[in-house]
Length: 159
Picture 1: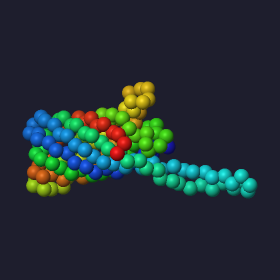
Picture 2 (picture 1 turned 90 degrees about the vertical axis):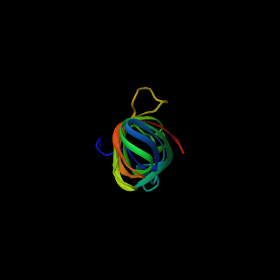
Picture 3 (picture 1 turned 60 degrees about the vertical axis):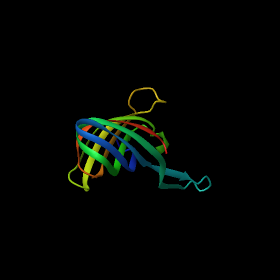
Picture 4 (picture 1 turned 135 degrees about the vertical axis):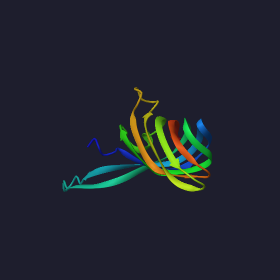
């Protein structure tokens, strides 16, 4: 089914930025890619088929760079859930360069807010520019104030 994601990502990490108007942030995020598999097991003697689900996983690290417009002072924490569509043979295939756009908001002193990101992953070992579509939603905490939108590039590698 095309609407059901191929895999899921749970992630947490942090960003640090000084941004008033145009500016940027750098961050490191750790995540786990979870990919469900439907398994069919055939008993060769009785010819009985047993089916069940397995959840395969792989740890990844995201090295992030963001450019955009907004306000961000100091470090902030991020955590959330991502959904991945596209060709993956296993969770360890989600590696490469992630290009996307993001928006975030956490106003005030030490407050919680939210963030969203959508983008495309380019697996450098495969032909073609974009191999996976990625969408994530999560929470962000701000030391002082954060809010804005912009472009994001992440290097996704084994953690």
